Image 1: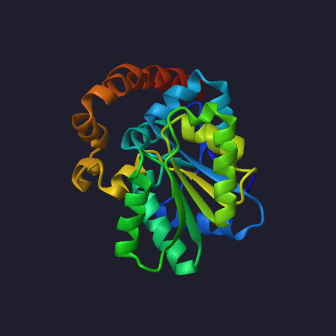
Image 2: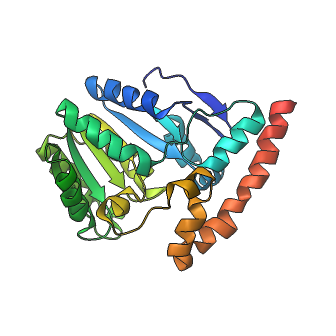
Image 3: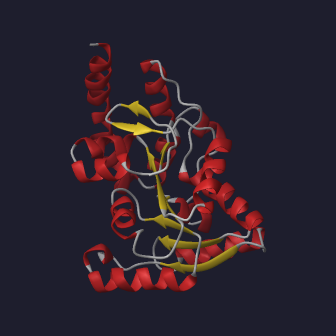
Length: 253
């Protein structure tokens, strides 16, 4: 692991970074000889790791753990340890791509439904012709349980000689896949980026900035995909309230 300072936050540890700090840290990771990976925690991830020790291990051992979500910023402020900035994958990745382009670093995008990663690649290249996106791939459903498919993906990434892998499967699939494979394929840095590939492809519309700034981007996303996201936001994620009571109480003992 790298020596980027982390602070305790609820049931895990996070890096308290601004976007500028984050991009500098990423450049440092890509410049090193060792392989690294980055995760981001939002309310959904915090809730999941409470009952998933393996996912918690993956998050705790990540080289960078970013805080994605205004609600988590509010909680951190309540705890007396304010987080500098919300860093979501959808905000980070465009800046990461620009930095990679400026520094001559190559990128591989994996995830999304069939054709989505390729569409994202086309959109990115239109706005930044200098970018080196050396490959894209949309794995079939259930690929994470098929060792032949996993081996194929690892070989594909290694064959592209990429510097950065951006994985967009959603949590916990992307975290577990990266953790189990990032040392097997040839890439310096692997980044968990959730639905970012859909935003880059224009397949899903991002919330306006003002909605994101007031902490309601999750509700905007829910309105776009209510059937898929209802359980996540209105059943699972409300468990964060219990976790706040549990861990904030422990902090005060």
